Image 1: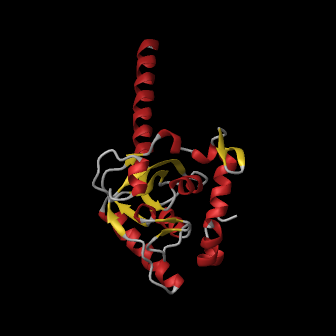
Image 2: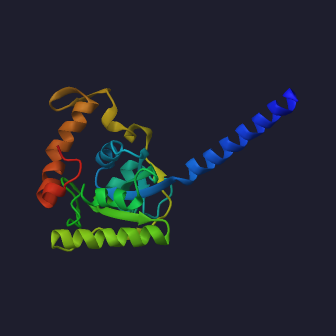
Image 3: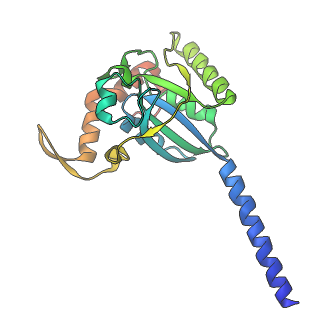
Length: 215
């Protein structure tokens, strides 16, 4: 009788683990967005409750396995983008996209802040009809809120290529690099870049009190 109970208990435990694991997996969703420098978008969204991971990469182009040098040089069609994996029991796709639009300058069709060129344009890449409807509604809402045409397009998602390892969590790195101002830790170099590029200042100028992630 004891052996039967033990086997039954193990079976129940395995069943519950499978069910809970399946539910956890089902609650995970991905959003792919391009908002200029992917270091900054990654840094912003990794702070959001409910976001599990953010990966920097390239998407939207026609070259397989592109490199950073190829993408930023132009001609590949790729955007610098991030893939945000989040728990939609804690934060919805709608909320992710609303935050994203308020963390960029969606009125700029030529790039973002000091980073100019096609690879730095904004975009929302959608993988299904529900994401498309949500993203289009968010763009319409942003247009109404700003009283100007939002140029951030809603595009069908294609393959997402992860960027080189040194781009991942770049803002967290403490490696020392050489700059014109002398040796700096990457964290300080990242902060210097973000401030010098005017990202937060411009987002605040565009969005005012609705600006996301600004200091």
